[in-house]
Length: 214
Image 1 (cartoon, rainbow, N blue to C red):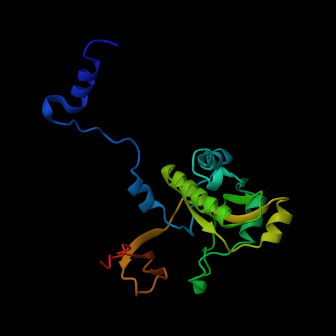
Image 2: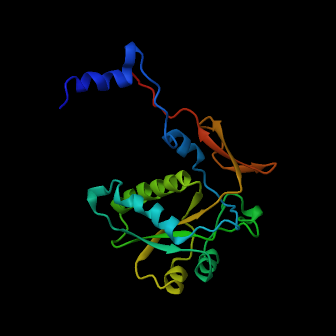
Image 3: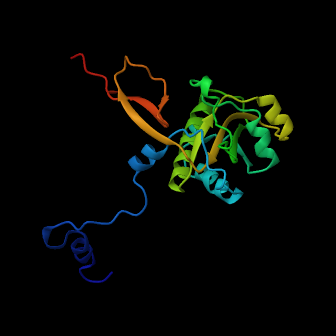
């Protein structure tokens, strides 16, 4: 090791007693979390290809897994007949049934169908939550958005797409065309998302910290 190596490195970061500003590369976690909003309207001119979906799924090789069981598997669906099958067997926007979301010509055309090799248990659901959030954050990092879809016809999806494993969740992936805004609320206020003047509002409780009784 060269003489004064550590001293020189220290000076690079803290030269003359003042810490240098290191320019951030990419998004911060807070930025990704803020942009990661459930999206029900997509730009159909933007095509999400299989390589993009593979990059999103690849995060599962790096994330935590309960008991390291790693039982989740992923079926990729891109624009075409298979995407039409998925769209015919899913439901979105349950809290706003009068809107019949997604609006015509804004349907997602790429999906990640999350399946499990084991019977669904609490441990599998832990993995499912970690995987879904991690993949959606990766999608946002790539300039995309997505939606967790739990309301779908499991039997039809398995039969028509020739899937042998049990699907437990479907992620829609695409380029968002929606305007979505977080609204801070008190715990006693309605948690239901709503739309006004073309903006989709998502209530989030502003105080989640339990107070001490001591």
